[in-house]
Structures are given as C-alpha cells and as structure tokens.
Image 1 (tube, rainbow, N blue to C red):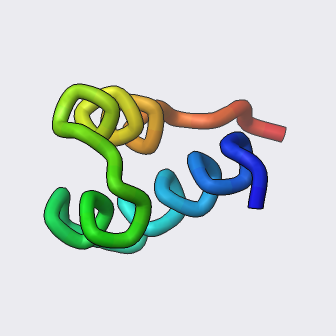
Image 2 (image 1 turned 180 degrees about the vertical axis):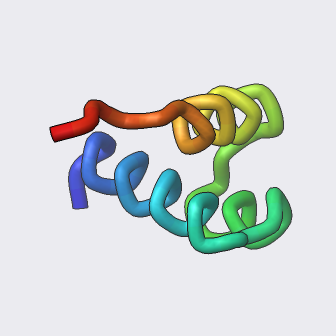
Length: 48
C-alpha cells in the first residue's frame, strides 16, 4: 500500500469515527500527523 493510499484510508477511518489510538496502531502515525489528518477529514469537500 502506498503512503497516499494509507493516508486516504486513515482519513476515511477518522471520518467513520476511529480514535487516535486506532490510527496509531494501524499505521504507526505520530500525534502530529494524526492531528493533521483529522483536520483534513473535517474539511468539507467540494459540492457538486
């Protein structure tokens, strides 16, 4: 799995309600990266 696909999966997990600990265990990400991914996950996407 590429880094990009891992991050996409982590973002989707965060949107689905995963905890920081779940992301840390699954991907080995540090808290700074998890916080950044959480911010991205909370941003509203484009409206079509």
